[in-house]
Length: 148
Image: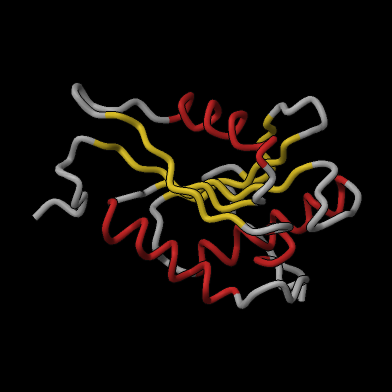
């Protein structure tokens, strides 16, 4: 049976990132540049949001247990057939107010966390700058080393 319980009419990807609405459209456009739905399919992006998600998944925020977000990701993969996760952080984040360089470090650690779940075929880390441009922080093929 097709994992995509909604009839296979949709190609799902998963955005795991901040709840800030300013990053939604730029990341959606970025994903649309990566994936091409089959004839008759629509690209749909599941969203797993939290304020300062990059810090949460990096283990540097106690906003909510990481396991909560893993369970949400399982639904995206097991019920929607998502194979791509985009983990994001952004400039001027109210939930994780820090420098862009620190966000980059959080994104790297967050990607390692999501890859460690073993759910997605591809995990990419991105950073959204003040102009709302999306920059790849961790490419799909990059091996991420997490400092102890």
